Length: 166
Image (cartoon, rainbow, N blue to C red; front, side, top):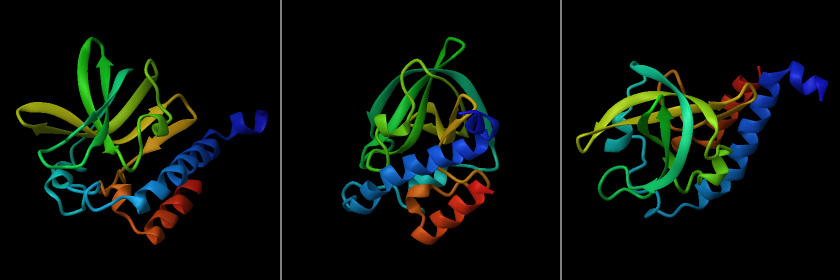
């Protein structure tokens, strides 16, 4: 146990990849209908602006299954209480990870990095990663350019895993 505590980023990396590998079979099994609207060149992905990243900090109130834009397949989202303000945070397609598969639960204190967007007149936050404690992150997008993990090839994901372990 002492070794794990001395190397939080190693644990963080292992936890992330365990969550990803748990979710990846559903990624490959997702039907065209389930993937609707989640492509790299789709309208929803173009909303995310990696040049205008922001950070939120608060407590997870609940999770929701939502339709991010009309006609899209369902998404996993959470409501964050940030000092009394309730913020809708979009995480990922439901077929990529359900609320349970994120490793985050109601009542958790989290830090979220991502980008603000306006959808149907409402401000929402598109997450790139959610950090819980010192040893756990749920990552869904590359921080540097916003590429969603659910759009990456196997080779790209392997490269990201190797970078994360360095």
